[in-house]
Image 1 (cartoon, rainbow, N blue to C red):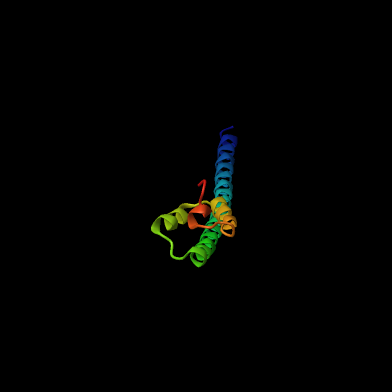
Image 2: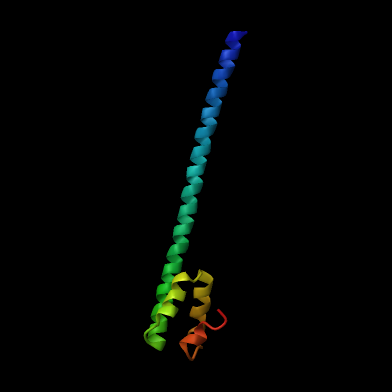
Length: 99
């Protein structure tokens, strides 16, 4: 009987080790995916900020620090909304009304 117990213990150890390795690999893959998604979002935000800033400068002239600060912390949704508003806005402040 002690022999069977030793074999069982060894099998349990191996199973645990394999399970841990599989769990680590799955965690790495999920981390990579999450990192890629975050990177893509950051890239989209950076691109949207650059485009909006260029349009604002072209339409209204130099931007003050307050507006640049708003652009730096804006979400992608806010940037899209403001970009849509730029064509109808008569002033730079009108672009940001309500936000």
